[in-house]
Image 1 (cartoon, one colour):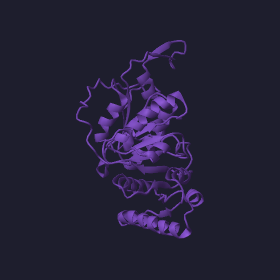
Image 2 (image 1 turned 60 degrees about the horizontal axis):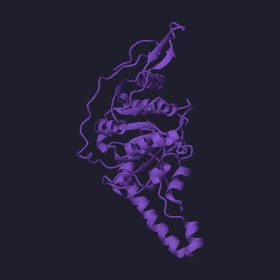
Image 3 (image 1 turned 60 degrees about the vertical axis):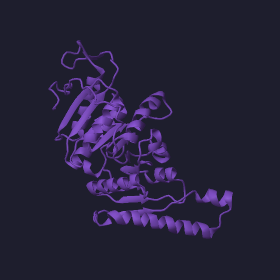
Image 4 (image 1 turned 180 degrees about the horizontal axis):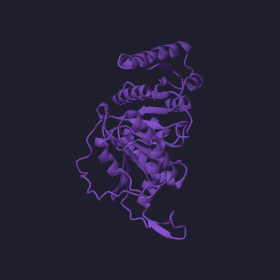
Length: 324
């Protein structure tokens, strides 16, 4: 996945508030990387036209498709965030997950909005974000709410990364170093080494065993970070070695952070199991945007290339065509 630099950022939108926030976040990320932004709406359903009042003639009702409305709103948010950014918009009559996974071959990252997991919308759209995050061939960023940067305030928090020696963990660590360097912010590297209180209380483990365990995990943390230290000398690295469950440790460390980065658990193409328990748990619980980074792999051979419908370009708020 390290070869995706220079490719555009893709923001998938669905007309919800969270997807607008995702488009705004994606615009700022594209500007940091010096690449373009592509905003897409994909659906295999035919939504009825949406009635809206014309701004030029308040008494006149105009009809706009759901896709056009979603794209226009996301485009406006992106341009407000980064006025000089090159933005392309397109709508496709296709299953969203299939389309985004195919496009992940030629993107530097995919940005999606997430939704509360305890709602019907969250259950339906969360399945999409989980599928794309597990199988995309580029990093996937899930934006669950407006952070300091999105709210118009200076973003001063660190980039937080979960450290793992597995292939997905190494890719996640490299991605986190790049993000910290682009943002000029410290990198907080978290390596959780077990639920110590539970082990001591329930299993009666002694302090010597825990001390040795901690030394082993500290060595893993040092070895993983040393691989990238020379490549990113300007990035300040802060190390954390909490004795608690990884999911809870990362959630707490990410409070006030600009971005939380984790790697996929498995390198192969198992369905949801490839994502792993920690990224799955953080999907709707991360207090900041969550980046999930995995290993490049081929999409299943039985998935044909999609048949694209003509792209649509919604009108900007002033009635002029959107840049394509």
